[in-house]
Image (cartoon, rainbow, N blue to C red):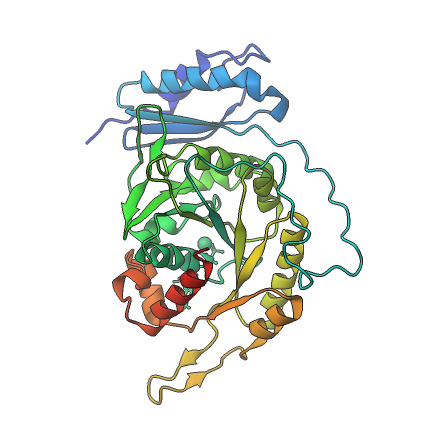
Length: 367
Ligand SMILES: Nc1ncnc2c1ncn2[C@@H]1O[C@H](COP(=O)(O)OP(=O)(O)OP(=O)(O)O)[C@@H](O)[C@H]1O
Ligand SMILES: [Mg+2]
């Protein structure tokens, strides 16, 4: 058993570092948020205003050094959650412009958005509503890209409820390279990392959107996804639910090439998709398409599809608003079991019909 230092000992060590603004110790000054102590690893969020990010960069270094100096700490990670300056108001779109006219016409790269090193493409998986199967889609889509031979990464950006590590069957703290980049875990040919491996999800619950997106932005850039010789072809981002400000702020920082929207067939979920598409249009993230999840259930006795929530709504809506309709996925117990067991269906049963549907989506999005 490894001896992890007590929270008190950690707070005391951090108090030896002075907050340049108040002159108090970091813990006293209330700057230590979301302290996580696990398996020889210590980390926390240093919450400062964006204007102070430069001022606190050396403090972050000092804090990491102080944590590393504690007996029982092998790795330390301090995330500077420099709060973003508010996003400039987006001018309303011209009255008649719709996504259907030309999905790319209104798209201009956000000037500040950057791409993590050695990552060619970033595809985000999002939904307005929670629990519609975003993570399931993200995980299986990533496995499908890997099966197509693409060098693939998967990042769980759901700071409020990370589930990718469980679904991919990875655990443990990431190791670091000599230049302090995180080495992603690897499963089913996919490089996996999760914000949930870095910070305590419970403490993340209290973060406001800008802090969360700032943490995601920082972490995505601190992962050794690939190298100049072997870049990552595609990085799949599993986003937290909601059309909230996390995506808004994230897309200002990270060059997201496109978003896949997951929905269930209920009318209320479809209404959320409309809202989502409108919002992605505002932040100039191209909508790559809509996946309708839990579209129907196959009667085990007859093999006939049972359309629990009605069928075809997402397809019709996608057509109407002019975004591609990518797939209709059934309610498939094996899909859930694969997630629960940490063995995604696409990898565990690639010959199944549901896996084939994911492969078709990956083919279409492979770029
Ligand atoms: N097509 C499906 N058939 C059967 N079970 C499914 C299907 N899609 C998702 N599930 C199950 O539904 C649950 C929710 O799915 P998932 O975690 O992927 O949703 P989510 O949108 O990522 O949720 P959250 O908003 O909490 O992040 C999981 O238990 C998952 O295994
Ligand atoms: Mg999820």
